[in-house]
Amino acid sequence: MTGVPPQPTLTDGDLTLRPWRDEDIDVAHGLADDEMVRWFDFPGIPPRSSLAEAVERRRQAYADDRSAVNFVIELAGETGPVGTVEVRRTSPGAGKVFWATYKPYRGRRVAQRAVRLLMVYAFGELGLERLQVEVDPENRASARVAIRSGFRREGLLRGGAVLQGERRDLAVYGLRRDDPRADSLPGWTALMDSVLPKKRVIAHVVVRDTSGRVLLCKVSYKKDLELPGGVVEPDEDPATGALREMQEELGTALPIAGVVAIDWLPRWEGWGDAIEILYDGGVHDPSLIDRLQPDGREILSLAWYAADELGDLVSPLNQRRLPHVLAAPDRLHQLRDGHPL
Image (tube, rainbow, N blue to C red; front, side):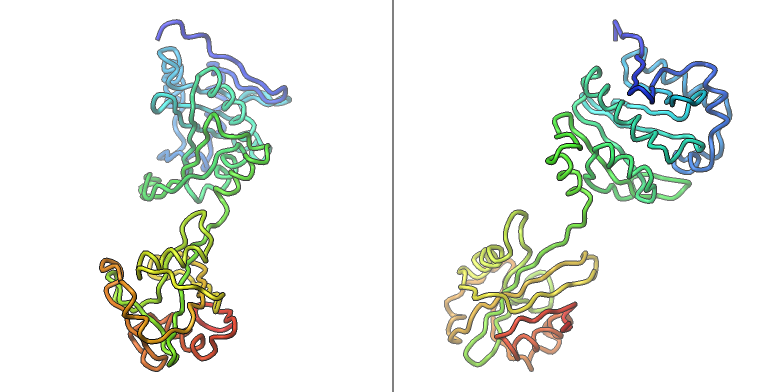
């Protein structure tokens, strides 16, 4: 790349990002500690020569095409570097952000302020459109820096890194140039939405006949008989989800007359926890079953079952809760894993 400008110095008035100087190497080497060894996967405290070589590589990467820009962090009132921050281009328009704060200066928002300064530079002068941070989920301090700097949590790379010989997960945080600022209401809301817990919502329908039996489906994906219904889609209310699932599975959406049970399901066989709502599908003549049309892919067949016939035909969860619901279908059952509260 021709015409690369000199690496700039950036400041917020109290914290400064500037290029490395040769005299910084001795100071920075003396401040390396076990936390840096752990999270940067060093075999031990690196020798001074390794740091000097790394600084030279970063200088060359900047001089060649600004594929990596590494800054020393200075703090007003302190002598020498207090940490480092870097943006490294990974593809056209996108880069990864890295940082380290030396032990004597941790807990003073050094990394957060440095990352914010770097973001302005990366989105502005470097013309990047997306920045990404990858953090070990146990590195909570770095996760806080990412969130407080405006990065949204986007997912988890399972086994995405090797740390001290152990394959570990990586949490991915991303920020686009056109994202609303984190100090605005839309930006803050989107940021919090990316990290707050999300539960699945399941909507099933309890359809009964005039003998008090319940309609159950033989499904293609497990041995247990199941109630009509399923998982509620994003941006779909649970009642609409229940009606949609019935339409897809049974060929018709039976009217629902309210909620008969609300149940919390703990983690089970690889599934995360969930909230399940059981809707009242009403009481029908047994001949209703002849008018329903199972889809033949997910729902293979339908039949009526009395409470005392369920036994091992349904999951342990439904073995616990369906007898309660069928015995008192006119009340709202509040359940925890199928047990009455």
